[in-house]
Image (cartoon, rainbow, N blue to C red):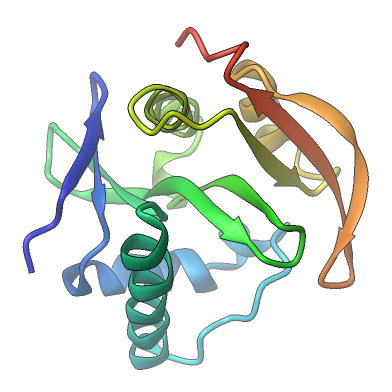
Length: 176
């Protein structure tokens, strides 16, 4: 399956996830440092991660026209993480999410990818708003959404976990 490219940045290509990305997807779903602040079920193995990816491609890409996108480093072709919009039925809103493998932390990739997603979301996709849910203890993630122009609208509970709800609107698109 050839992945559809969504957008590009100076250092990244954002494209749809494919079955070939399952190893990185599994690492992003199970690495203790990556999921420390994320209250989600952890796949038991690569096969379960592949099944989850496939279900989400149907529910997100095919049904909604958007979803989490692989973030591929232009310099190496390596998938460093993912970023993108996803409908969260639990709150009835679309969330900007991102996860990167630890070797790629602290390099501005989450901010770069997030800005590209927002430009695409507010521009070609013509959407007016998007949220980000951030564990208050996750200072790095709060810094990313703050840099992207989100504003904190207060705490909510999702899947039994208290998070801050951040909001970005088309009237305030990211500059980076």
